Amino acid sequence: MAQRISAVLLVVLGLWFAGSMSGLDSFEHVVVVAFIAEPRNGVLLALLCATLAYHSYLGVQVVVEDYVHTPGLVTFSLVASRIAHAFVALASIYAVFKTGFGA
Image (cartoon, rainbow, N blue to C red; front, top):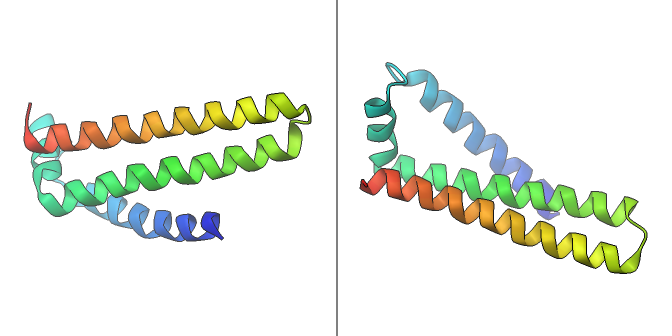
């Protein structure tokens, strides 16, 4: 169920992101930073990053549970995957807010 909900969120957020990017005049650094600095865009972009990381984690979890058969390795793989995905999510959200609020 979580995969389906996150997939629906990714469709909605992905359409927003694609539409927003196509509406920019250019992809120059100043233009993109101004786009991210708008509160609504920054929050939606952070939500997109978090949802992508969560959906990816759920997919990796299914693959590990289906194809890794050594009990210790399953546990290690799931914990490592969770840590890696959490790091990526936090780093991307930090980058979005750091960019939005300025260096």
